[in-house]
Image (tube, protein in one colour):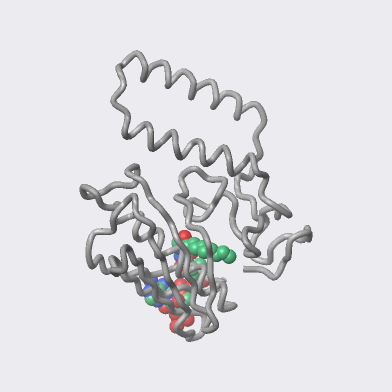
Length: 209
Ligand SMILES: CCCCCCCCCC(=O)SCCNC(=O)CCNC(=O)[C@H](O)C(C)(C)COP(=O)(O)OP(=O)(O)OC[C@H]1O[C@@H](n2cnc3c(N)ncnc32)[C@H](O)[C@@H]1OP(=O)(O)O
C-alpha cells in the first residue's frame, strides 16, 4: 500500500498501474451487471432459443467493449479512503470476477476486516463456496493486512484449514492480521466467519518486495 491520497497522480511505489482519483461509476456498474449476468447464467432454466438469444446479446456487448482497449487492465483508485486495485479479482469493484471483497475496516491493533457475498457461481461442494475461492479470499486478506501494517509482500506460503463449509449467498466476514516479521519474511493469519462461525482459517508467510 502506498501513501497516495485521492487527487494525487503519482504512481504507486510498488507498481506502474495508473492511479485514478476515483472509480468511474460506470466501471462499477458494468462489473455489477456482469456479475448479475453470471449468476443468472448459472441459475437459468430458459429454453435453448432463449439461451442462444442471450448469447447474442452478450456477444454484442463484448464487441462494444472491445472497440477501445487499454494495454494495462490494472488500475488503482480509492474506495472508502483505501487504495484498491480496480480490477483485482478479489476486491476490484471493476472486475466482475471479484465478489468483490468490500468494506475494509482496520481496528486499533491494525487487524483488518472486510466482507464479501459470493453467489452460487462460486459453488464447489453443494451449497458451499469452492475451496479455491475460500483460499483466494484469505490470500487477499493476509496480503492486505501486511500492507496495512507497512510491510507490502507477496504470499509464498498459504496454509488453509477448512473447518466447515463456507456457505454461498451469505455475507462473509474475512479477518486478517500481521503477526510478525523475520528479515524479509512476514507472517499473518486470517479467518472467514459466516453466521458467527469460523469456516476457514489461514496461516501465511509472505516475502517483502
Ligand atoms: C495494497 C493492496 C494489497 C492487496 C493484497 C494483495 C494480495 C495478493 C495476494 C497474492 O496473490 S500474492 C501472489 C502469489 N504469490 C506469488 O506470486 C509469489 C511467488 N513467489 C515469488 O515471486 C518469489 O518467491 C518472491 C519474489 C516472493 C521471493 O523470491 P526471492 O528470490 O526474492 O526470495 P527468496 O526465495 O530468497 O526467499 C526470501 C525468504 O523467504 C523464504 N521463503 C521463500 N519461500 C518460502 C516458502 N514457500 N515457505 C517459507 N519460506 C519461504 C526464504 O527461505 C527466504 O528466507 P530467508 O530470508 O530467511 O533466507
